[in-house]
Length: 563
Image (cartoon, rainbow, N blue to C red):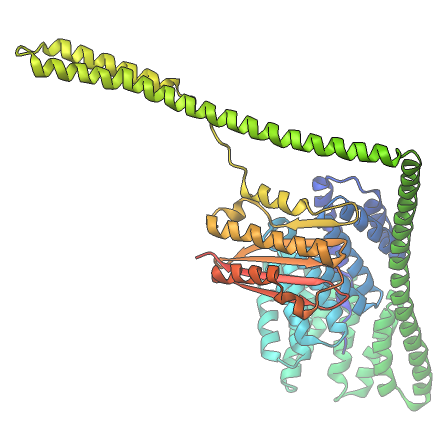
């Protein structure tokens, strides 16, 4: 049996999170608010369109978390409409804009990984789905969401027939206070746990628990839960009582029809085709074929629809860039029309050259004057120390050497006087405090210097605390490595998007560089500049990995130990 209850969960979670976003939102993004209005009104195509537009606004303003939130919502919409491959692609793209070390990002990471798991289940890759659900649990900071993720994880183990693992997880969930206090959640765990025990041992009597779960769901008017219970009961009686199994399958079909859930109607029809008398089987089979064709057409339409929406957004973006380019060219033509003659250009170049020469000479003169002032100050200070301190001490030594009767109090007074004079000299020396620019700001300034109108540079994880335990040598080498990568990007990649992410874990610094340029041939990594980059990282005991595919950008991962 297939389980489709996963569809609604991420939408509900992100709807709850939006209250937090309204408190934290810094960038005015009207498209983002419109997208949520369409989510609330059940219009997925419109919400997807405005989330994509909002993503571009966040992107243009350098808000990486805003970009990630839009992509997560878009991936959920794609998964809910049956575009599972598209949902995977969009959700994986969202991960590049989130920082796993930032606690504020964890709610979106957990939601995104849960949605990845749901899409992957529908593509029948259960092992991969398990890894996504484990990551959703790892980054979840909400006990209610965690229960949902664990239930999804247990279902995957059940489908893989790892019943012991599934039972262990269900038993753990059953002891959570939230589950005990919520009839709907308790009924869900009770029904799933009983079904799993029966699948593990066909002699296990799961009926009391299955009936109890159905009764609770009927009392709570939980139609989705009733649909699941009726499916479980139909499966339980399939081998012992065809009549009872048929009854529950028919009841399931009636509930699924009320829910307008095509997927669950399809499941019920599968059971009815096997269980119903021969005179009704043909009708059920025809309904099954029509419904299945309708679902497949709807999923194909959704996939094409979302692709078309993204195409239209990108087309509008390209059109705006084209208009900007034409406007720039018009301005350039006006400038060229008003340009001065060749002789004037020559004079201008001559003036610029003379100005540059004068500026360099002036700079050298000012540096020389500053150096002379320092030397004069040092000479003056040296002379003053010699005149006041050295000569004074010499006079006292002379008196001690040639006087037989030494005036102790007089000598102390003279020494005290010299002490005060030397202290006054030290107070006269100007102390200039040199404020060191924080390293995180140095890195940000270095990377942002490569941004341009046609190129965006995103930085994640470059917090001041990240560099606290990193020594000076490692910092110096990192600056050289980042500069080499950015210079190589600017010269060769033709990228319009660059993402650099910094992370620390288990006494190791990780730097991930990604761009969407044309990629880099394998032999290019052996160039002098990049060879030096590899040597720098290896000299720190680290490793650097280049991953490139022509036409699909470059990814460089650097790992450096901090101990």
